[in-house]
Length: 163
Image 1 (cartoon, rainbow, N blue to C red):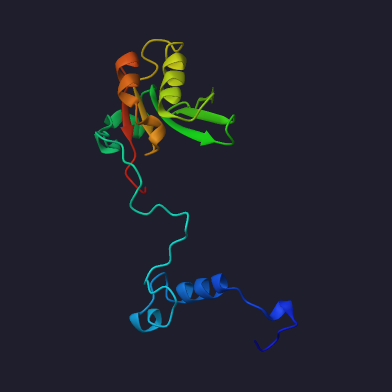
Image 2: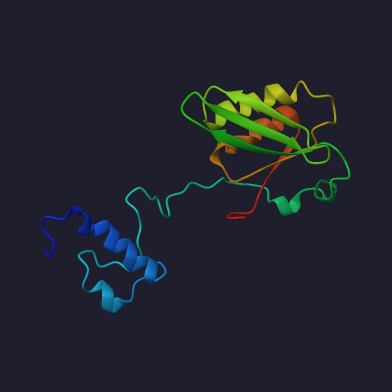
């Protein structure tokens, strides 16, 4: 150590690794990796779950949504998302595309069954024909969407991955 008694002059191993990976734009050259303790070309945090993300099976793409939903000419096409806070603070947002009317639905849990049940209860209170389609992101909270479609007769469309 050059400065053993000066804590401001010390650098952690994490800082060194981050600097190396940032300079190499996420991937290190083979010559550099040979000198590192862990010889991998890409930097991944310990918490990352690369490759293990679950997918929604049978998701209907947003490209198949009716054209009137895109041009906002006809009311009844909604967009939804879930805001997750701590364990007791979960909210579903629904926004109607034409009027921009928004609804918030408080959830007791953030699992798919709770989200779908809350959506079904809320949609039943809407006038007939006011909900024609629902567009959602790729969150797993809508993995149980078939129950929603059966109960409400509203088709759920999913945004393209990483859009």
